[in-house]
Length: 307
Image (cartoon, rainbow, N blue to C red; front, side, top):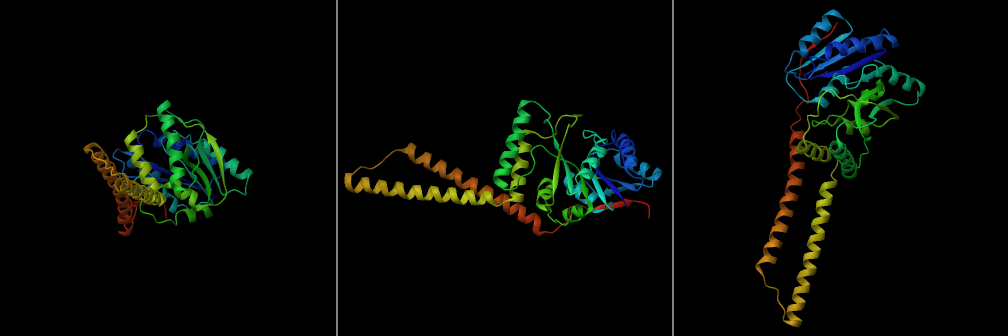
């Protein structure tokens, strides 16, 4: 098979039929030997039924139905693991990334055959000033703590060669972070700037973004643990030096420091520091807890495909 197209469905009822029509038209410009894989991620609307209707009317459509919602990135990895095409095009079905991009990505990869992946990056980040600023801070913090340099304004849309896809889906993390895995897989990649449309406001609040940042960092790097260790060591050394200073003043000058305020400030500071460090360790323990249970990161209830 020449081309596989993968997308996920979640609250996609109003988009899936238009997406199918537009992506099919683009695929036919490239080859007649293609497949469209629709992964239903436990969508609460009628996205699945519409996808099944498309499968019944077009032998090139395959539908993977999850037993429940597992998450966007896990649905992506599951869809990629079922591809058969020499080339694999990954794109969201919400039409914010236009299906017509397939031709642009195809031409870019054919022009530079030394590359294994052509990946999309957002030309201009959508949203207001605060959203753009928080996005920039997110990438800077992530790259600093993780040591993994993901492209700024990363997008999932990409055209990949099958050899790259086979190696990408070999990762067995239970907490799947797609952006990290694409970098860890390696291979030669080329960025393609695209304009992402905005059909709906972001579903991520500021708190959600902070939580996601911590989740991604702890899933990819032990650096926060080392920072906590180094900071703890620095505080300990400083405390010992200060104690020596106080003893010196007491012995040689008979000067002692009294005061309830200084004691309470010290207790509050070190108490907060200890709780923070315990929290960091707790996050890592939670990640280990999830991984060692070795649960599947997705469960397929049923597959709809022509034999």
